[in-house]
Length: 381
Image 1: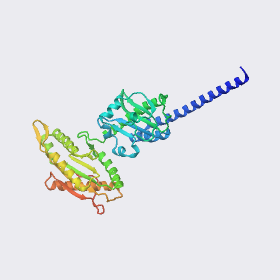
Image 2: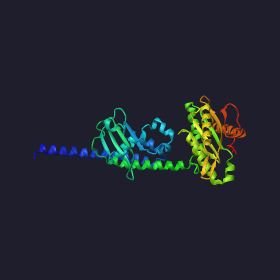
Image 3: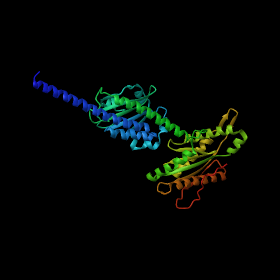
Image 4: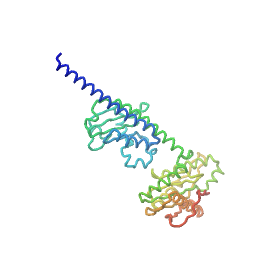
């Protein structure tokens, strides 16, 4: 072999070595990025944290042009589990909850393997409908043999996700993400169980007291109206005295179901204590709130409560309504919430005094006048 040939061979080997070292270096950096995002995913303390990491941190860390997360929600449980503000936020618009049969069928029959490919509208639009995407990576999220969702990465670079590209890192991320999504949702279920009344299965007072200032702050930003309806089952003590607490529990459960059936999904119904319920009606003016209160009364009255085949009870309910209109402002949100509740509670007391089985309207909350605000809302019989 001549000197020239030896020189060329040396240069070729040197170039190969440099390429190998470069690839090793790039893979090491990629591994570090994946480990960083994995640690963040595993440390997420809530579903909101997890979604923020997936939709923001992951996109920026890996310089993606788009990402989408689609989760199976055939029974609409996630829609109730994930806070409504999160679902409505532009920040989380990459999230889709799948509940239509055609969507669930597509999820069920899609491949369980990682797929990297050129973006094709006919094939990928249901997964990612973003303009300008040229290549896509599709990561099925699988737990215990069941697809719980799919995560998709999109790039305007047609070569970013090439067909049949090595997907070891993506396979690992798919597994980690599926575990973290499942854990975050289970944690959310556990947290929400502490906000649920075990008897009636509606929200409890703790949840209502936490949600009230949140809704008042949102009302203040959006300048919408908000109303409160305070409810009390009439003569409930006599039900317990005459039929026992077991029958009283049945009455509470059935009344709660009837009230819930009248409300919208984003209205807040809570058992406030004993036989009292509180309803928060976001984006609802005074006249509409009175109509809701009357529908609740009608729903409770429309038929007798069936306890067993030998016990049918005629149950009525009284209501008090109070409203804050869109143009009203108040700096102390906590005090504002107490005044809204106290006003509705006083109207409920008036309804009891006037014969029960009716709704009394406290009207618009007078923010400029002094209202004696109790620490707790009083009970009624």
